[in-house]
Amino acid sequence: MRSTLAVLTCLALAAPVLAQETAGSAQTAPIRTPDTVGTIVSLGIGLVAVIALIYGCAWIIRRMNGMTGMNNNAIKVVSVMALGARERIALIEVGGQQILLGITPSAIRTLHVFDEPVVDAGNPATGDFARRLQSMIGKSWTSPTRNE
Image (cartoon, one colour):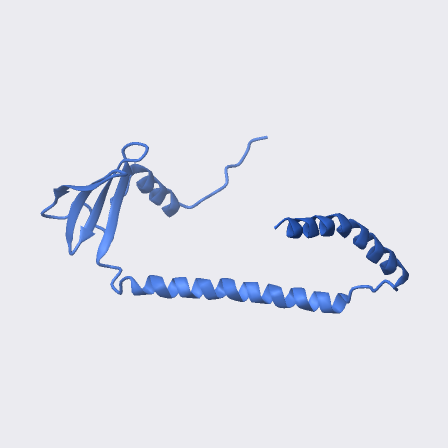
């Protein structure tokens, strides 16, 4: 065991001396310039491989999302309203019936099941702003003239 330790210590001490000798002999050898065309080709192939990998992963993810459900129109989110930083209520439509859900970070609870739809999912209720904007769009737009 001690002899192995002694040999390793001698090699560790001799390594810098051997490195200096090889560095000295490297100075006498001609300096080779790197092959720039080969480097550029190598980098280009690597770049194409990385881009192909990204597109392949995107394709796989898209295919996996397609397998989750064929009928994405079965559940519709009609409206969502934030009540706090992490609490929300949501009105969803499932099979023609609207359900009011309470959503917290730890649970989702049914608050009420409506017998008839409260809001038409295809045509949500328009607010006052939306009505005023619709009436303005219907009018002809003219630029105001300034009296100078």
